[in-house]
Image 1 (cartoon, rainbow, N blue to C red):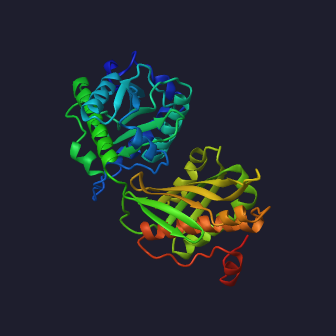
Image 2: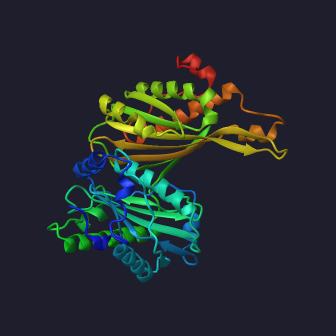
Image 3: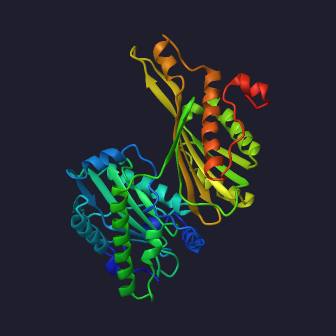
Length: 416
């Protein structure tokens, strides 16, 4: 049953945005997420907030800068709607809790077509679309806040809350998501006794309160993250939920920035497969350019292979500029996220950097990373991700993963 017109700014305006995706696809996405079993282990953290380098600036600006609050986005199998009532509730609560100077914006943000195979996919896709729209808008506020509520079939409960906090450039400043893994979410009991308009309005009101409460706790609480610095790389990880058993089969989807593809790609693919399999994890790896829609292209392959988890990895070159004006690739910056296929929920997230030749680049005139060093970047990136994954998710110590040509040749690990 569609949501009532009172929940739509200017009437039922958002159905058109879903025409790019067949209704059955939207139904499958939301139905799958809603049917995922509730986690036995409830996380005390107020939602999962992926690491952002812009978070410290946001926290410092809270007392002085304004936040523009947009109408809330309601995602259902029937369509996408806006809630001005929820927006006003959020503005009121932000002012009451003195989190920030909140200002209501009358025009809504179109999140585009509903896409993704899990809540994490929806969260990422919608944040990217919202960010692009915000870039074209003029706002006096330093930050923008948009809440998004996900409904399963029937519209009588909420199975996910997204809070997008972006800066004027559309960068993620403090965004996070909530679901049944989080105690705050479960304790709120976000379900309605019937399908009436009044019951759904109350449910959305409660969801807005949960979202603002989580934001307040996120602002006050430190991040539960683990950072490892080893020779050659650093990686920061956050475990969101646990698996019932160790991950034995994984499907890895990698997006590479174009300049890394010629030398880096094959070495990264082979080293990842080898490193996972050495640790008892059967790995299937698919690499695409960063501009490609890897989710759409890989959906059928993931389903056919039936992995325990999917891992999405984004890798960008790390550039540095020498004082003489030269710019060169001196490493990589990467992000990895793991989704539990049984629940559709994100289970683990990591961000990191490979930067071990920076000193040589600055101290040796004319120094650049040759082809062999580029391959080592791939091996260091592999070592960072797989070692952290095996320790955090499977609870084991990783077998040795060698990161220089001589060691790999000596121990029989591929160097191509």
